[in-house]
Image (tube, rainbow, N blue to C red; front, side, top):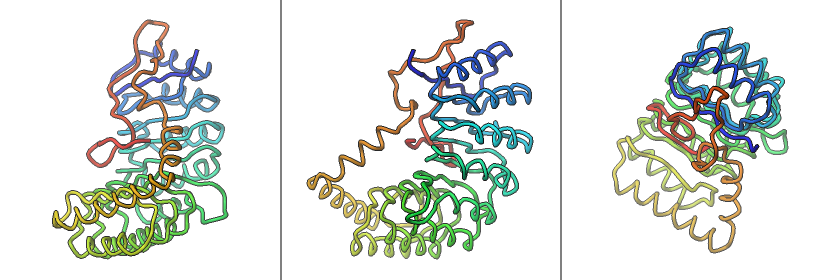
Amino acid sequence: MLPSSIQISGEPLSGAEVRDICRGLRDNAVRLLSLRGFRLCDRDFGRTCRALAGATSLAQLNLNLGVVSSPSRIKQLAEALRTNRSIQSLFLHGSPLTDAGLALLNPALALHPALVALDLGDCMLGDEAINLICGLLPPDGAKSGLKELTLSANPGITPKGWSRLAIAVAHSSQVRVLNLDYNPLGDHVAGMLAVAVASSRTLEVLDLEGTGLTNQSAQTLLDMVENYPTALRSLVLAENSISPELQQQICDLLSEGEEEEEVAGGAGDTQEWERGREPAAHQRNSSSWMCPSGKNLEGSLEPGLEAARDKGQWV
């Protein structure tokens, strides 16, 4: 049987059903496991972590919306990630990690051989966390690192922290998607990010929705898009104090660049790469693993990364 998906959103399950999930993980019958907002007791959380540690088919793990809710759970998840070798995408959006919690989790993240997408949106992070995250974006020529990073809605990060992230992004040879929406960045930080985008050879998507930007930022970004060749294809500027005209100019320039790449034959390869590594969240026709009890565990998960208001983004 091909690996399939278990998707649950805020629904209670019995102990027997949790055991069925763990059995599916141990039998390598699960490619996507989403327990988003799931009310899980500590015993069952520990049982699930022990099962996913040895799962070799699991590619995406979604524990968004408060599932990882205590230091003990962070430690259990870290222990599982130290053993697991298959997880490519990890979503912890809306978990009260704080800098201290990420410090517990970071060694396992840094050493994981397959992890390429990480959602730490709304995790109560600050500048100390940014220092750790930058280690997951190694510079050119170093080890492999994250290709997709979400840090939405972490208002505790200061301009100093964002400046350090901008430097890491500028020198990263890996990162393609960066979601910073609903952070109070302002024009100063946006200027630093424009320099990072101009320097990056890989960044394709930058989400700056609701980040306190004005026409000043937009003009800087427009100059960057207009005058410097970059890999950027999508720049989200909604919910900012930016004129529709400037937003449209930026959009038009990015569209022109993408059309030129398609004519040259360069865009198709990248898009195929993205589709090829996309976990089962977008594969609507894939089978859903059934508990032996007969309960279908496919729930109402929105696909992908959730921003501050729990919006979707591909993974």
